[in-house]
Length: 307
Ligand code: FAD
Image 1 (cartoon, rainbow, N blue to C red):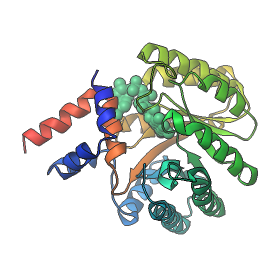
Image 2: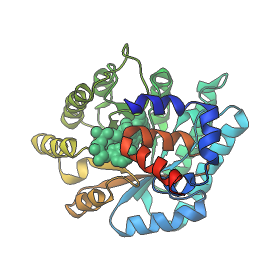
Image 3: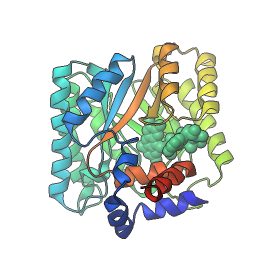
Image 4: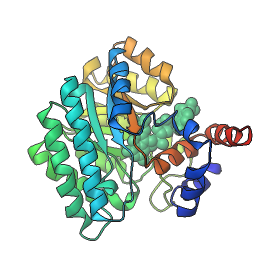
């Protein structure tokens, strides 16, 4: 019940100002977004990779309003990639990007986002790693898939995300489950209307399994983006049925959520990639994490009261 309310608040400027200014917010935010700058995040990258984990890095930010902000987003990723070059971690650390942060919603946004994201994909390829395009709300997806297809002409390893809660996703999965593709399947984190998306958890979970089967039986590289223990067990079974080896798919989870499970899967020999967000514009990302689990909101509110 609370989830949709929090997701609506995630798009409210008034709530953004209120929550961002709350004196205790930062310490709660740190659980999910463990740094603001590249210098903050490099030690975390070193620590997690030393423990056998892989990473996908998100410089937080979305829904920007000027082309200059889009250029700044591009530059923030280029700065990160520059630091990654020194670490020589190759594909152990890839990038996740939100096209809305690269200008997709501005006038001429499709071309602007493509022009801004291309240098990031090029720079990532030059250090032996990849970029995955995150999935945002359903109105942005045709543009995201078109940009993905365009980038793949030169950088076939560019990945994208599909969301199990959308009715369209089974068809997208069939199209994308081709040789050389990298596809992350998630449940979906935005507030979507009943005309385009399943609303009930059990419907979303069933759709997730159907789509996962398509990806596992296809020829691409499935990336299972979920913390759900049932879905993780089903993914292992489907991978086994499809005859996939451990390095022919990977698990992905968010930094700060089920950290023990990250290490357990890695210790079993699985590729386990931790989606690690950093930066100062954390509001939208943080609110989606609150919406996913009401206990997070209770923890957040308690920390404000007990201050
Ligand atoms: P759930 O049923 O929501 O959760 C299963 C269990 O995981 C819960 O019982 C709880 O123990 C734990 N858990 C889940 N979420 C939280 C939380 N916030 N705080 C604490 N515990 C939690 N969504 C998009 O729409 N677009 C994207 O591009 C995208 N990229 C993602 C990348 C990765 C690597 C991951 C893991 C998720 C991504 N998501 C994305 C978010 C996703 O859509 C879900 O909202 C989120 O993963 C919660 O769903 P779940 O599969 O973990 O299952």
